[in-house]
Length: 263
Image 1: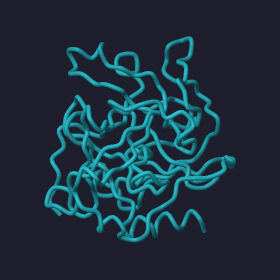
Image 2 (image 1 turned 45 degrees about the vertical axis):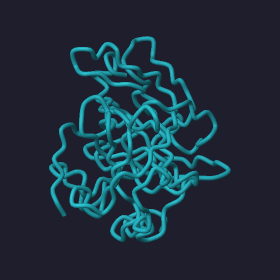
Image 3 (image 1 turned 180 degrees about the vertical axis):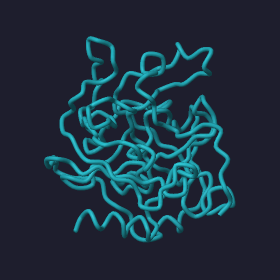
C-alpha cells in the first residue's frame, strides 16, 4: 500500500480550543430527522477536560462507530444525537461537559497515530443504551470492491462539522452552526495506488457537497442506505475542497474487531 501524504490531518477533527474561530458538511443541507442515529461526540480526559469533537454512527443501542483518531488519547466521551443546532454554553467554551449520554472510547488495535489512515477506526461503548427505531448497519465483507468510480456511485455523508472552511488568515469566515448536515458525494477513487485497499476518495465540491473539520468519524452511507461504507478520515487541504478521504469498514480486520463489541 502506497503511503498517503496528507497536507492536513483529518477531514474533520476540530480541537475545541479553536472552536471560536472555526467552530460540517460542506455545500450540504440540514439532515433533520433523516439520520437520528448519527451523533456528535466530544472526547475528554478523565477529569472532563475537552479535547476535540467528531461525528459518528450508533450501530446498536450501545455501540457508537467513529474514527480511530477521534478516540485515540481520549479517556471518556460525551455524545449528542439532537439534530441541532446545538447551542454553545454561555461561557463560550465550546460544548457542555455533559451530553445526552457518556461512553468509553476504544481504538482499532492496529491503529498508529503516525499512519492513522491505515486503521482509522474507533468505537465508543455507551454507559447506557440509546433506543432508536433503527441504527446504522455494517457492510458485508469486502462489499465495496464491487463499486466503480462514477458520478452515479454516490454516498450519503452525515456529520456535525464545518459548513465552510477558509485559510487561516480568513478563518473568521468559517461557517459552523453545529447542526447535523447531509451531502451526497460520489466515488472518485477506490483500490488505487493512492487509496490502497483501506480508503476511498469521494468528491467534495459545490455540486455534491462533502466533509470538513468536525465530520471525522461520521458515516459515509452506501447510496441511500443505512450501511456505513466508511468513516470520514482525512482531507488533502485546509479548505476541505476537492476530495474527502474515507476509511473503509468492510475489511476483515475491521469487521472482526467490531464483532468483539457485539459479543
